[in-house]
Length: 141
Length: 497
Image (cartoon, rainbow over all chains, first blue to last red; front, side, top):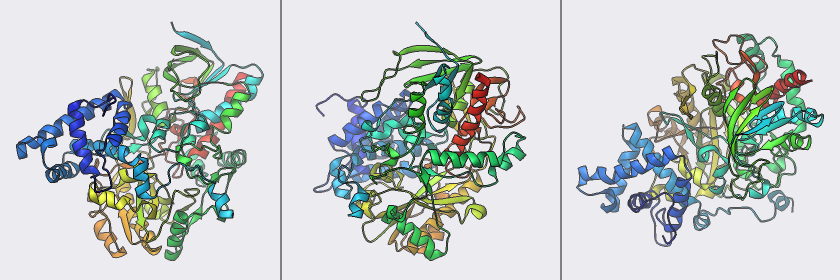
């Protein structure tokens, strides 16, 4: 990440990157939401959120980095991927509404970064901006 | 230094309400009246609509998701010139027959007449090119929905849409780059400007009072059109202040203003038209992104279960965000994005006093709890949308309120789609049609304005947006907003001459 980040610190980026890699995992020939390009988009979008939201997400990232210490004795970003995913699943379905809500926000920004990429669109066969001939003109021949 | 601007009329907001009022007063501006529109958001022109989903989140307040305090529901509201008419699909509904009459009867609004509003609907539809689209506009996503409904014997009806020379690029919800969608950005605001009304974008009004308003003008974001004034604090004097900042904005503005004798009903009785998306995965490509996205709805369940089902289309990010999964399963499902048929179910929620907008400092807070009836309607609607897609040949159906990620046959719908899965935070119900908060009525204890939007006790403050609705309009509200705003503008014009 050569350009300076607008929202993430080194610590929060580490946690977010690990979570984003679980939310949309990379596969051979297909990057995930933890790619630099996806993280850059999430970073910019987060920097434009109201100050209160930025503070909440920062706090949430710090919390999920530390919470697994109680269960696994290790921080979130240093867990192996399967345990990270299991922990995120716990956050998604827990009875504690604030944790579910925090995870929903985290997931939204990870998905925003990934599904805004032209490379992702190619995988989905989604054409993106329609600069080709207008649709109805094509249909009318 | 605070800039002072003297006006006859200040209109706050440029969406369906504010844009309509401004255009209806333009003839007075031509005759010398000083009229301005203050819009909190930027003035993005067609050239700024780049058809990229995430870039275009800048058209919305808070990136398109203003959550309720309990996170049960997130409201999508525009913040740009044109307001929500810049980001809607152009779906044009008249308020259901009898609704206006019931408002008049139930809320003591003797001056409000059903026939008068119906006549306005006709005239406005003509002005904004609202019409039933021809068969050439039916893309596969819409055809699947129509065929599914027909096979089940459900009535399927077309929407009127307000478009002209549509090229079918499909980006209506991200700002129409061709100017084919006839919202206030393309029709009423240009007319108002041509008539001499001044448009002030990036102007956030913080407080209104009898005889004016105070706010701040911000620098225009890069790529947007500049306004007529430099950034800084601003104070307007105006004989009439029209408040048309949308349900979220107008209630919060009145509450922030600490007006004497403001009705205790201010901010209350908010309805949101709670909505959930659902997806049918078809064997072949649907390509919902080709052509005009929304054409049909069924109102079969409107009386019995209080909801409509409408066709819908969402771009990749919002589609993925709405799916109740993550990981390889989500990524794999999204690979079939082009095979997804999509519908949205919209619930007619009741106007309840507890559902309200309040302010905490300068911040707006939305308190909204889904009622038991709304939750039941959402669950029922998700099952019925599934039946429609299976009838149309779907291989798999994904509902947001399902025990499993997807179901693959209609017999699984009842068992898997259950209220217990409607957990706040895991499933976020959406809203694009907030209404109420400054409801009309004759009693200042239970309503905020009279039948012409005049705030009780403050006749120079006139509300002209969806916050006026005493109850949900049950349908996409913009045409009803325009008709009510026009009525209010007529009265304002009379008071000025």
